[in-house]
Length: 198
Image 1 (cartoon, rainbow, N blue to C red):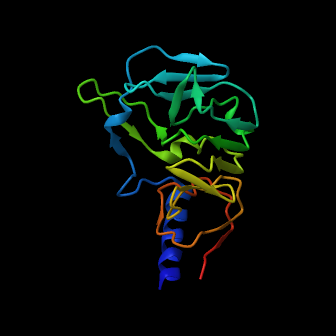
Image 2: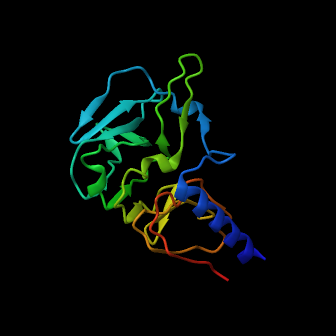
């Protein structure tokens, strides 16, 4: 029964994600703790970042050309806790094959919406990855409390939710206990085989 349920979820996610159609539940949430201040953006090497209201940082841009993109865990002693959607440009998004997420990150795909009255930001985790059309692996620091990686695929920490499968993955082995597949988890995917545990 569980295998049949996961199969149905996989099929639905694959179809929805492949065409980029909106789902009834888009997965977009409101996160008060990610109140983005109106301060100017700052640079750190090839990264562009902003300071959040709690003095942690959100990465909002990347201008470099590394094929393996490693998000810094901290900048000038302040932890990087979030990564914006679409941080790459048309010039560098296609060259990234691997993305490393440090232990400090707890939110992905923030859209940078600022509500001056309530200070809410919206996010969609897949928004960070879908422009990286040649992405093969997503790696997560083992001490991260919010996200994890198995065979280069991104899950939540408990691995009961598949958040994103890199576009150049051709097959994926789903972990035991998987019960949810995020909207757009297989967006623009080259996936041809999904192995479901018994």
